[in-house]
Image (cartoon, rainbow, N blue to C red; front, side, top):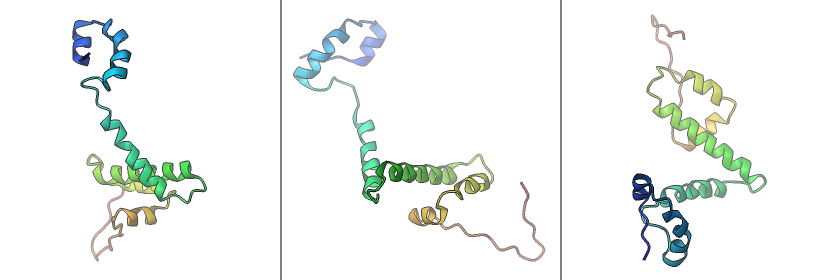
Length: 121
């Protein structure tokens, strides 16, 4: 059984092992310490986005759905910004209300009380 440890190849510089890697994979399956599950898990994200497609332009629908997910993630997780206004302005070109509703985020304008003021950016 051929076991190839990527750390060993990197540290000991035995690149000759790579010539045997193809045969080992055919005979014994994926090489040790090569994680493919991390990348394959993204397939479920694309599949779920595809299921919500109208099948007219699936690649466009998937791209818009992933764009929306990334946009919401940035709005929610960006702690460096004091305001999400620039991202919200950019997102207004997208169907923002539908997107926010889809992810359960409520975007409400706060009413100004008498004697208060809104900070200008």
